[in-house]
Image 1 (tube, helix red, strand yellow):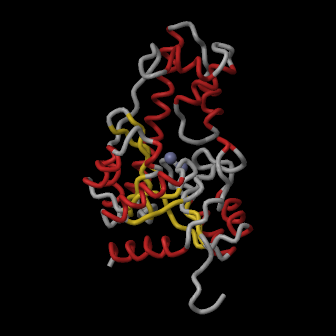
Image 2 (cartoon, protein in one colour):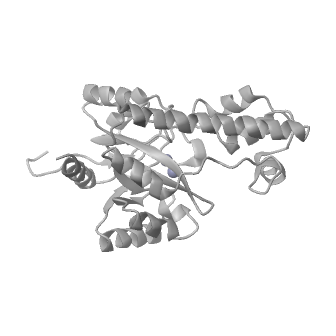
Image 3 (cartoon, rainbow, N blue to C red):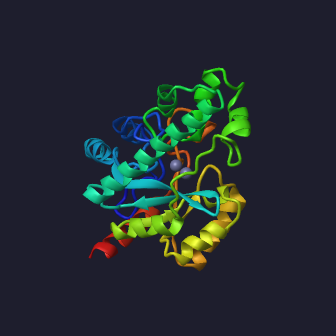
Length: 282
Ligand SMILES: [Zn+2]
Ligand SMILES: [Zn+2]
């Protein structure tokens, strides 16, 4: 590597066992090293639990670990994900916040199980929790437990007959708007980036996020084709926003998704994130 060449590529969107990924934090970082990534961001769903372990592993392997989180929000009935980079993940109120999110998710699963019971569908809570594999429990796990219990032939039927938005066992989620998530991230000195915008119904969420002061857009993602990538790049450039991207790797071939490092992001995009982080903190 010459003095002017930049470090190798990075992956700014990954999940570990602290949400619904298959890799332990240490294994994810070791795998990043194997794949010649110079940096990797840990962005578990509503959890910052993996970060310190990943940072320690990063020091050992010479991989730059970027602390992150992927927050679940909802905008007019559409699930929207907000990435938060470099937030103060050790702050007590940050830990309390995510603990509270987790509590509400479990509470919601319990309520759905209660409603199902009233409909003569018996689903054990332990099966639902097991399906979530220690991650954020939600409707897909209730549905999976229903299939295992023989109540429905498949997950699709579980949703269609019971737990869809209009279903008899539906329980609403704790609602966090994208604006609230952005506010939370910024309040804790983080950088807010709207995740995989092409997966939402339209660009309303993107413009809502921009109006709420979002710092960046995730431009490169497995669910973005070349057309979407250039579309969101253009929006980012027009609005002078940061650009990020990554594999959204959950480990293995879970979800048939792209594997760690398969959407290599040039290091300069991480450098821009870090410059912004330093500016916020100076
Ligand atoms: Zn997501
Ligand atoms: Zn993700």
